[in-house]
Image (cartoon, rainbow, N blue to C red; front, side, top):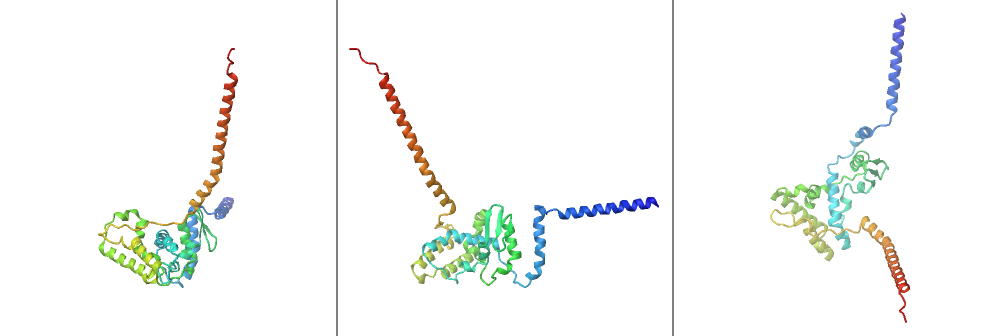
Length: 279
């Protein structure tokens, strides 16, 4: 009877120890490897709400690449011409499905991204993209014709995303299809009957994007180059140079003054050391 009682006590103590261990384990903060799993778990209750919204079939990455191409190889020329692109143009910012979300990305550091809607932080941009898809999908305007990725064929997105695509064999049918899309964008966005600025931008768009859609011609994409506005790095470099210039001139001035003082000392020594001639 005593042995049975002792065994029961030991078993009870073991169960209590196991219970305490489980409580301790649950009290520990989640590790970095489990943060993604925890994040995906917190989004599961939203799946039922997502059913009430239209499913999005638009690549965020390709849309971002298309916008970067426009920002580098087209928009600076448009701003230089002071031309207002019509909202009917598919290249207009309002016709980019993800433009508002991209503008709500706050990038502090290489490993620090923040959501501009709810201020939640993430270690990488891809996690912030997933956060937008899971938490802020209701902010997307999924109207027809707002997927900028659909224009990637005309804008040469593959060339920007993958360098190996330059060596891929050209397909005449695909090149003709992309050229037709490209020329229709030029006609819609920059009608030549709207004045000199529109006419110049129409010609520029054809040279920048459309002329390279051919398997016979040797014209390369973005032949007119890019006209980026001075960036933060350029401005910081200019400020640094302006700050260092006075210091440089002070050093040159001090060096020249020391050199003059040295010459004067040598002259005094030469005069004092010179012997007087005998009479």
